[in-house]
Image 1 (cartoon, rainbow, N blue to C red):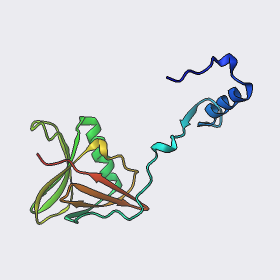
Image 2 (image 1 turned 180 degrees about the horizontal axis):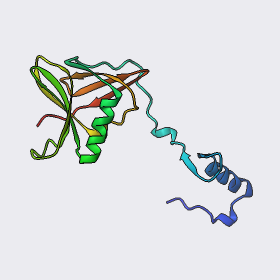
Image 3 (image 1 turned 60 degrees about the vertical axis):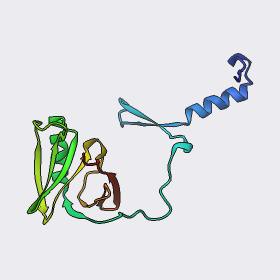
Length: 165
């Protein structure tokens, strides 16, 4: 166990340095009137992960569709209002639909939107809590290896799918 001397015995310069370090680990943003403010703390550099050096790619491209921002917003709003944890992409052989639901509860409320045509039957599910996306339109590509790519204007999200039970 390392014991520190009491604060009163610290050298003035080291105490000032401690105060300086504590004051400079955040930034405060205020409105123009100065009535409200937010304090953002900087992250410890040791916990920041760097992007991989090589480009990430999907193992396979099995399903593709376009998701516009209004449809995404409708689905997220429905999931919030109905308190639904899952967003599932269903293909029934003729059309593809996104549906917010609770896949563990057969009698749960649901909300669905048609997003395209499909020749195959499939079901891929995400946890709604994993879909923290910037507002915008996305080209979505899903791999059978339980990963999806949401590609928008200048941004890419790789999001894990839930395993099918």
